[in-house]
Image (tube, rainbow, N blue to C red; front, side, top):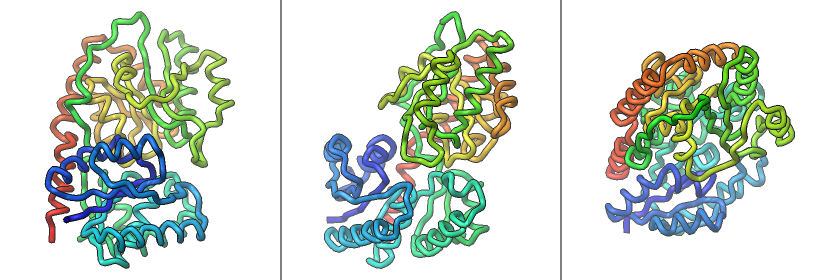
Amino acid sequence: MRTVLVSANTGWNLVNFRSGIIRAARERGWRVVAAVPPDPVADERLRVLGCVVEPVAVDSVGLNPRRDLATLRRYRALMRQYRPSHYLSWTPKPNVYGSLAARMSGVRAAINVSGIGSVFIADSWLTRFVKLIYRVAFSGARTIFFQNTSDRNLFLAAGLARADQATLLPGSGIDVDHFRPAPLPEAEQLVFLLVARLLRDKGVEEYVAAADKLRAIGLRARFQLLGGVGVANPTAIPRERLQAWVDAGTVEYLGEADDVRPFIAAADCVVLPSYREGTARVLLEAGAMARPAVATDVPGCRDPVEDGRTGLLCEVRSAESLAVAMARMAAFTPGQRRAMGEAARAKIVAEYDQRIVVERYLAELDRA
């Protein structure tokens, strides 16, 4: 039986973002083995998709050589056991150690760089060390998918990828039938919504500061946050700080949600002041639901948002620029915001439909 091994740093990543690829591969007769950190709920969802689920320990944020070596050995063991012809991966550690194991095992690897991560944003010894690891690991991959031109060019210039490996994908794609247009709310106050893990690199602090500025000039609006807090990441916002913002009445914290659609439907505008993305999925979700966006003019955000047509762009790391863009959005009439949302929906359907991504992966599996 033709077998493909797929991996990410969480089972939920595969369930939420790669299910279309998994289903399509299964329909083509592939056995799909999912190597993910144990999670009973996500594992069961993967089995429902038709996957064989195998546990693999992935230390997503640490650089512990002993743990990482154990991860590499586990990938090699799975490749000896299942003898896949192809390996597909997403997220850094599965990309690095899975592709190394694939190279050692003679397995064709196609890895997806969905973003360069916070470690690449600043120049440091850690950045240089991680780049060395990437250079070694990625050299044996047959295909490296990038989600924006800037990331692709950065990897090529740094010698982390070769031109014959590097190709572009429109993010993870989006199910435009699942994320359908929703009418704008008719509430008295405008609702801004930031959907992201609560990290500094997502621009959460700039969003809160912008909300303070807008309240100070008398803008009547609600500023909401939706996403995980206290996640394992060096730029995570502490719970105490979030609570202080909520207690001050600056923002409303909506918690976490598996299904973001009701929250997007209840908002007038989605905001993402991220420092950098691969392709920001929430901007695809918002556009598919006919919501205009305010986002930073950085790779992964400027691609799905056309300034002045489907949303507004602002300067990165600037609460002042963000506040100006949000004030502009608030000054538009409902009809203007509706037109922006309709244009966003049209763009997402034309350029980011997940069927485009699925066909690219199926073509990769069909390559000898």
